[in-house]
Image (cartoon, rainbow, N blue to C red; front, side, top):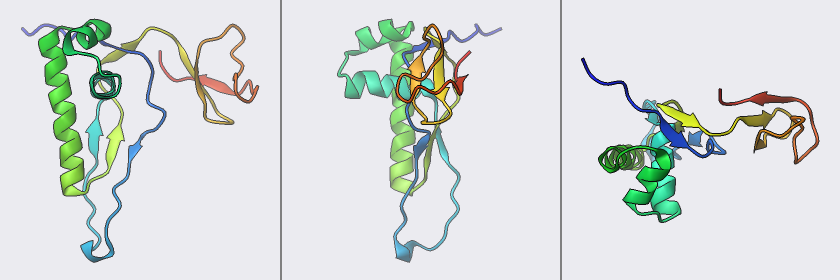
Length: 134
């Protein structure tokens, strides 16, 4: 019987849901399925390529082993390459992750923010918010 997967620690959700491929007029209309990049794959890419962390520090931050981080990172790179080469849209969602803080999304301005005492959007002052992670 395999072990349960350990939850991957993520600092916050991305501020967007993905990217859409722009097709040239000569390409015709192909309806290719989306490439789905999991939240933990996005986090691994962000830590290693955007924040320039080394693998050991990024694995420690995500609360996983270094070989597991490498597998997640390699999977993310393959998915992004597939989306670019095949002209497919990329969706960022799902996965096996946990967040340290409760995050809210303002339904009026779309801003995401971590839990505050009175759950008021710090950007627009709206109280029309919802929890985006549980």
